[in-house]
Image 1 (cartoon, rainbow, N blue to C red):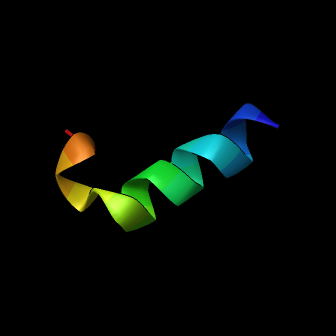
Image 2: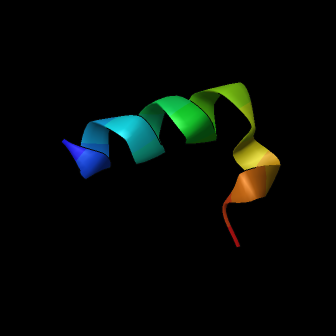
Length: 18
């Protein structure tokens, strides 16, 4: 589940990824 959330986050805010 977390992995889907992280994916959605990265799509909305790619800068969130280091």
